[in-house]
Image 1 (cartoon, helix red, strand yellow):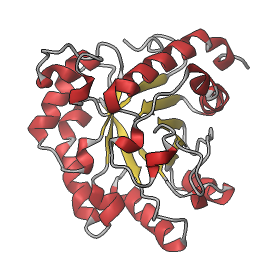
Image 2 (cartoon, rainbow, N blue to C red):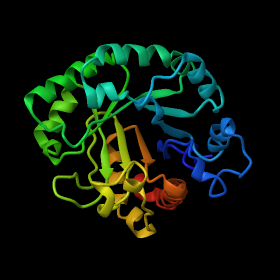
Image 3 (cartoon, one colour):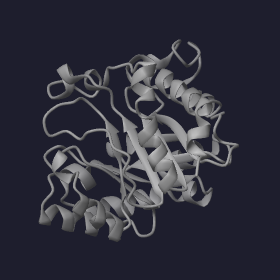
Length: 272
C-alpha cells in the first residue's frame, strides 16, 4: 500500500487510469483477468484517476463493483465527461448523469472529486470563466479539480478567481513548449493536485493519447518537483499526485519512485 498512508501528511500518489493491457508483465501478472486489475492495483496505491468516464458515463453497477474492489481508505478522482470540457453543449445533463452513476462510490465515501481537463483551445476569457462558475454550481459541493492546458490561465487574478469559487487548481508537468504551463505549486483550495504527463515534446501536438504521453521520468526530474510538492503540502490538508505517462507502465514505475522519494524526504514536509 501507499507508504505515506499511515503518516500525518496526506499525500496520495497513483496513476491516471489503471486498466491498460500493456501493463501486463510490467506490473500486472500476465494471466491476471482484466476484472482483477483494480484489486491488484489497490495493493500498491491508495488513489487512482478514473479516465474512462471522459468517454462514456458508466452504469451504477459498474461503479459499485469498482468501489467494492478497493479498501476503505481508497480514493477515486473521476474525470468529467467530454461533454463538460470539450463539447460544452449539454453540460447540465452530462453532469447530472455522472453524479447519479457515482452514487455507489459516493455512498462508500471513496469518491474524492471531479477532474475537469480542458483543452488547449479553452483560453482565459470572460465567457470561459463564466462557464467554470456554471460547472462549479452543477457539481454541487463535490470537490472540483481543473486542469488548464493554455498558459493564459496561469495568473494571480485567475488563482484568486478559483479561490473565490472553491475550484482546485491542477499543477502539471508537461513539455516545455510555447504557451503550455510551467511546473508550479499552486493551491487554490485546501486540496493540492499534480498531474505528470511526461515531457515528450516531439509528439505533444501531433501524437495520439498513447504517443503523446510516452515518456519515463528520471529520478532527478522527479526530485525537481520536491519544492513544489512541499509548497502544496504546507498550504493544504491533502495533496493528490497522479502519473499519466501510461505507455508500457511508465506511470507505475514513476509513481512508485515518487512514493519512495517522498518517504525519504519527509523531513522537508514536516518543517515549520
